[in-house]
Length: 296
Image (tube, rainbow, N blue to C red; front, side, top):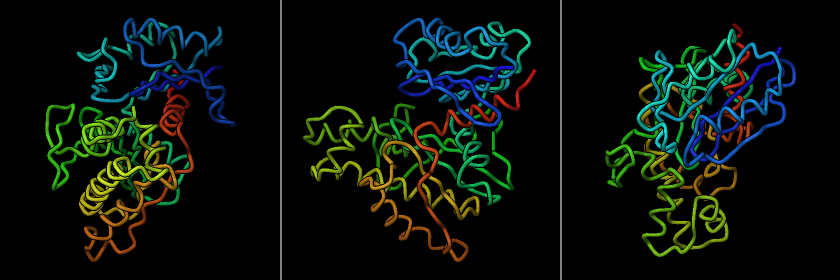
């Protein structure tokens, strides 16, 4: 029996077999295709499966999604921006297999719940800060999915004091300030000559002034959003993953300062914000959890 995890991310499609005892196996990935996205995705899945008898597939996708309809509409996949029926396409590829689709943030929360830092607590918030921002909420030991499957979309919480334009069409969203693509765009507009979030992180680590300022803005906005959401949901544990939130990143100090400034309610003094131990494949791990529960 073969279980497969698939991640439709902001910069990559990734897939792997999932072993019930050992977890993720060899990870195969490709950059997000500029065209013929499903053809490339199907080739990736076929490469991973290699003729195996597929019984379960878990799919983690950036949003928005329509979980009931099995449709994804990720803004970074040009072919699918108006909606693509990925659930039906995968079902056609693997007849008889159990297929489950969830938002990337939901999968992030599942991964932390079953494999990571939130296993021992009933309520927690998991956030990935990379090119874009994904979030997942755990309440009473259960992951919040939401009416359409888009629960946990913390990237579009508004942050006070910021009016940056967001790709969603709004202004002042957390992702418009703290997402890696947005932070790099702000840095370039303010004289930084680099390209992309990875170089921005490296330059901030080396003390480059504009790069440090970009991650400072990101950390402040993130801390404000964390303070608001933890107060709303009475949560005292937040787990951060993603490239911008790696341990030692210049984002952490301003983020912690913002939390200390704004999370002042009497039930929040024990609020902890900690780095994830799951690394860059946390969302794919969550897709693996889905796969193991999706056997047809």
